[in-house]
Image (cartoon, rainbow, N blue to C red; front, side, top):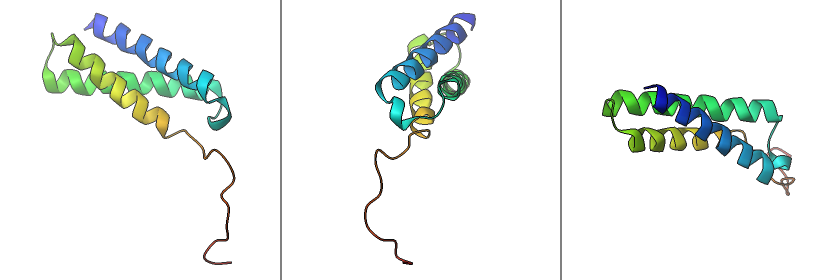
Length: 89
């Protein structure tokens, strides 16, 4: 259990750090991105561990990766201005 937790924290930090390096203009503050990556990875590992039971490290890390990437994707802002008029204008 401890190995799964440490692995998912490191995985979440690595994914969040990669996102801040590749998309700095589309993400909020770095501390928010790093904490969201770690929290998503821990929640994904917890859910996968609960569903698959212990002893399945690759599946737990896959669940941690999936939820971490999904939570980081929620922080993305649009790349540019939205062109055109709104329906109410």
